[in-house]
Image 1 (cartoon, rainbow, N blue to C red):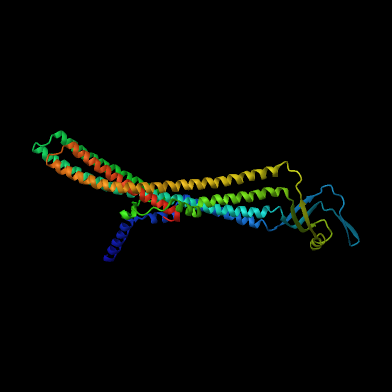
Image 2: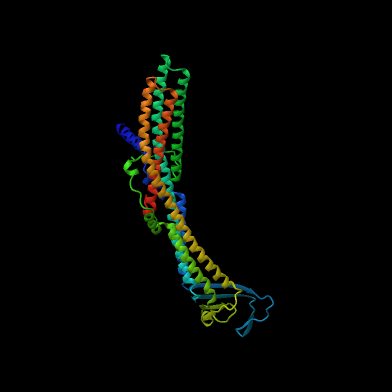
Length: 443
């Protein structure tokens, strides 16, 4: 019985620990890379492209197939047959039903078709590489979304703490106001304002917690976690050193991103693909050379020869070479070539567009990191100043030297300064994280 209780206690402890698991951002990323459905679908597309590549390589080999045909015939008005003499008597047998059998093996090999087959292999290899890069793009998009949600959760978590501190202050002010009303130093109208402020702070906490739960839910859904287990994230310590660390140069991040971002590599592959497509289109002007070969035999039940002899005497083998030279195709090849050239230009423009988009994205992250870093420095000084001012206002309010309006204004100013500090803090962290991701490919 004691052993059962021990095992049960350990199981409950394990379940409790599991339920209380807090996910780091890296754990979220690792889990999403293994379980996100969109990412899994993109990997299947890559597998499909790999099969196409294998099929195009196999198309270089000759085809070989065996065939047989078995048939029964009937000649109802046939009046002649096979005569045999038995014991001095002539017997004639007329077979109106007969049986045919044919057997053949055929081979065909396209020796040369203007390199269409080899260029098809190149195209399918490029398609496979593009599918791999598309999968990486999807993975990057998921990681960026995780970083965005995770940073928002960190911001709201700290924002809840700030609002809770404001609520505690509001409660103390309300209690102090009640004491002043009791001794006739404050009107009930002013006390009502303090009570309203306390209620507002309570509402702000509820609203912020609701937003926090919503972002956690979004992150949980992104990870494809569908069970009822409570989901929570680990809250790392964010120091001033982390926020104020040097922001990498815009040009340095951009140059590294050009080397490792999959969307840029995929655009380059699209140019290669358009070059190969042009070669495939031009092959329409070139001849095609093929080789064929076959051998076979046949049997017939009406023959006087046996099955084995018929198989031998009716054996037939054939080999040949065919050459097809295009002369006039109704401008089909010319149209294909021109469209392939247009696709070349389009692919080159797509690469330029991707490069410009990448630069704009990195520039936005860089500018936001720089700006919010400066905002954070200013906000820290403002918070300290507003905190000292509000502490002084509270003391003066307690002594009856300041009224309720001045106290609430000071509290609003402090809260506004703290909110600005939090926003600039986590905006800086997020944009720095994105710059690192675009520069190194790692979160």
